[in-house]
Structures are given as C-alpha cells and as structure tokens.
Image (cartoon, rainbow, N blue to C red; front, side):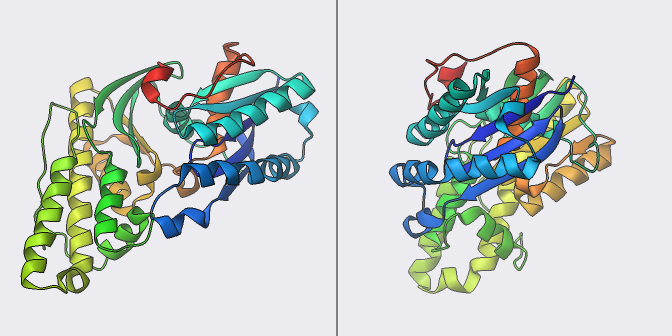
Length: 341
C-alpha cells in the first residue's frame, strides 16, 4: 500500500513543504527569507513572522504540485527541533491544526535526522542509489558539525562533534569580518575559486580522534587580518580571493581528515554528507575524491536538499510512520538538540 507523507519544515529561516509517496518525491516547495541579509544573520522575530506569512501558501502549493488533496495524506511530519523556537512554533502549530482538522496522524521529526536520511529520497523520474546500513554521515551546517554512524533510520550514534563553533558558523564569522554579505559561506565558496589555497596558513586545531574545533582557526584568521592590516589597510580587499581560498581549504581539510579517519576506524565504506555546508563545491569534490581513491561509495545530496527542506522531513517521517511512532497534540517545539534525545 502506498504511503503519502506531507512534510513541514520551519526550523530557521526557510518555510518548506513537501509531499513524498513511499520514497518518491512528488513536490517540494521552499520560501526563503531575504529580510535577514541586511542584518548579517537571522533575526528570530523576523523569521517567525515570515513563516506565518509563508506557511499556508507553501503547503497549498506543495499539495497542488503533487496533484493531491489533503485527504490523500496518510500523515503529517513536522520538524519539532532543534531550531529557533519561534520558527518551530509556527510549523508545529500549523501541523497540529491541519492534522486535527482532517483527522490525520502527526509525526515529529528531529531536524538533524532529516538531513541524515535525505539520501533516501527518490526522484519522480528515477530511483536513486541509497547507502547501506551502517553508513557514516558528515552533518555540517551553520549550527552543527557532526560525524554520525547511522545503524538504521531509528538508531544513530554521534562519533565526532565540534567542541566550539560549527564549520558553517566559522565561515560566516570570517566572511563578516571581511565585509562579505550574509550568508558568507556561498560567497567564500565563489571567491575561493579565484584564489590560491596555499597563500596563507591557518591553524588546524586537533581535539580527540574524530572531534572538530574551529575556534582556533577563526582566531588564527583574525590575527592574520589584524597583523597584515596594520601594515596595509587595504590588505583584505587586495587579498580577498586568496584569503577565502586558504580559509576554505583549511576548513575542508579538517572535515575530510576526521571523516576519513572515522570511516577507517569503523570499517565503513558508505559515506554521506548533509547540511548547508554540504553545498560547498570544494567539500563535495574533496569527499568524492577521498571516496573514489579508497573504493568507497559517496552520497552527495542535490544542492536543493542541502538547505533546510521538507523533503528530508517527509522521508524521516515515513520511517516513523511505518514504526507507528506518532506524535501527540501536546508536543512542544524544542530548540536544543540535546533536549530531543
């Protein structure tokens, strides 16, 4: 019997809805919020207001694009956390109201689990190759940097994590210091292609066997700017491409080195990446090359599935639906990942 899931994602600044039938994506709609660009970061109050404006048309469009009506939906999967409480509240409340009005089961999803299970989304015109369990997932974004051993859709173990900044957070902070627009990660990715990765050398802190630290890298980067600008006030503008190339190369090397070490340690040959930084071209090519060199299988998400999207929420919700792990109407949004465990 076919199972149709409506996914709703509102953890940060993108409002998204998607329809998945079994594992096949029927529609995916994302409304992004440009209002935050002028502030150099996401403003929680503005984000929640934008979600309120976007969520009805986004869900309506997702249903229409899929060619179905709400009565054909078997369950509504929504992001309970982690994320911004105000943003999560909008998605959670809307999902509850829709479920109650149409007597549809609710399924709550951990946002990070959605990123991890994104490789199991199939396209309307093709069934994609899926990783075998167990596999390793490098989850890397502005808020999280983790290596996760995925035993099944329901059993996941964090084997490495950042002890300070997330990788995307470090890139955004360095980009802001250089005067680059928000979000800084994509801009650094673009400028890095014009620069030399060996132009500057920044710190690569090592903490634990598979853990990450980007605070020292960020400090090293800032000290370099301070010292060079004392001699030349135009240093950043004159060396922007080289700075971006060297910074990005250092971040990617830290991520890839830890991931390869973990894969060797656990004897795992299926490797996936997810999260916003998974859209970075240098990271994607580096992970793909590392896997090819060792005969491992590499699962890179389509760029539209690296950002926060409801397709991954729907696919994660499908697994919980099959296990009959339903949510109740008193489920409240949860901001912190640790509180979801």
